[in-house]
Image (cartoon, rainbow, N blue to C red):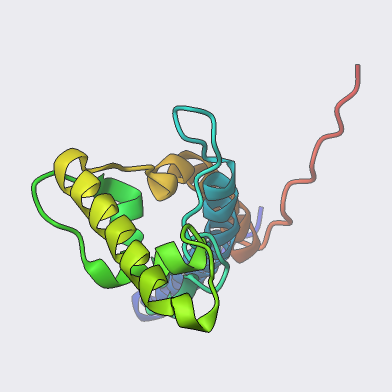
Length: 186
């Protein structure tokens, strides 16, 4: 067994170097986890169904990759939903307050709930759209909207990935090779 003598000052420098490499390893792991989380949330959103068994999809902006942005930070990374209605999709909306008219108007037009008509019938189409928008707003006002919690439901999978990734990155920082995956044999 070899014995190394080290002064107290150089011990502090060596420990700071180790701590820094471990911090960097954890940051790397968290950044990889945020990227994984982006796809995990989108998978959860796309597999979400209503109680009646229908796929839930309003305009498609919430489930798009462009909505979920990974931003590197000093401490790792953050995963952010940019859609204006993200909170309403995640947590829902309590009854009692009238929802905004603009997004519902756009949704009715995008889904073509009121069919397009000829140019001279355009004013009657706008009246029909206004009636549909009013009905949808009143229904949301009275009943609210149930939250779907896609991010919350994705967190166990993301946490499991983070744990595995942190272990792998710390092994690399410690100078040990990552553990090889065991093959399953029967």
